[in-house]
Image 1 (cartoon, rainbow, N blue to C red):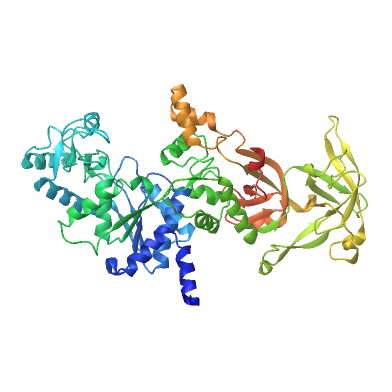
Image 2 (image 1 turned 60 degrees about the vertical axis):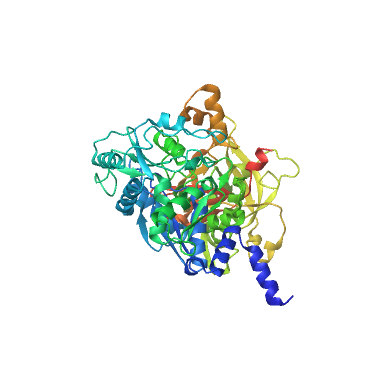
Length: 579
């Protein structure tokens, strides 16, 4: 086997199954050997991490194969949609690192879809049904029993046309009439049993106002919109597998039977991104926001892209995570720890190292000259030689972490304890000499003596000690608020657990959620200190608080009140706790 053949074989094996389909379609000359995809979110909420997987696939395939990916808003349900969500979706896509070729809306095609529906009525392929939703559902049948035809199935064409017009003029109240496609009430595929394709919605649309009162259903609008735009690969999640035959049928109908084999949109399905300890339904996320269980759509505990952005996740880490879990034809529950691992890996390479003390106790270097200040140089990122350095002040009085001192320490305790030496990072080796306590026995000051010959970089600094602690100078630091975020849910599978609670107790979704909320998902620390270097830090700056974790400046931070969010800890402690 030649080297070229080996390389081609290796590359072929590395493709996910969707990409392999795209490659095969291009090789066969389908759709003129071009790739055109679309990302079609409904503007009824903010995008979450699950959408990131679809975004990476839709835009990624177009980028890799010299195609175009369009952004199309599926705005066919005006009661739930808003311009706020439209703008937020566009911001999130750009933040992830993608640009769309064209911006479309399903509402762009309302007239074309209406005309198509009228043609179907005239051709005897659609009819107005006046039954209630419950009656229609009861007549659908089962997977083993055929459905029952509607008593309105064979009503005169002229009558259906007239009623359809009335639906759109606002003369028909919601729920009283629908337009159904006339297909096959005995079809094995339940979606073929005369699906509803139009319903009445008496609510202003965020783009078209009150022009329309009859709105197309998703299954009716989706395939036709793909066809109108020239989409070649319509990539959907697995729940749309049984919808695919209907998708293809409507595309055939809109072209009135013309040969579309080499020029039609083709739907392919992949698995959703499911994460444990995460609830991603926009309906449930909306409940969290409206009921005040979180602080908005961008609460850093939310699985929304804006929430992850505010928390300090980088777009690269999310894209890398999506790439690692891949695309399959079966659903699986991914471990949230995998996402956090991808975040750590990315931030390790890009985050600026700084010193911060989040649970402070004062450390006094008793033999250090009073009033003396030294400026120490510290490396911004040891993983990136181009990241440079910055300086930090050292003085007689420092803040150190309370957890780094123990008066009566066990044998293998290598931090601050009386009689033991430790290194103060980028500074000196010091020996603890004791502590001071308040009337309640709490340590309020720790005392130590420094060895002036052990300054980092000096010959004496080579003396080995087992512990290295971070610190900030009391006189040269800034006070800050630090928010320690953790997982919002205390159960591994919130969706299934919520369903079980609701069934057992007969409660609503909100009450079930309250039982599953992790009470320790947010801890706010108000007495924290950070080095002065962070005075000019801005949101989306990626930081590592040495020995503590990765952090990000919160959008609420001001020069007078610094606020930092913990993005992720340095190590995965959650899995250890739950073993």
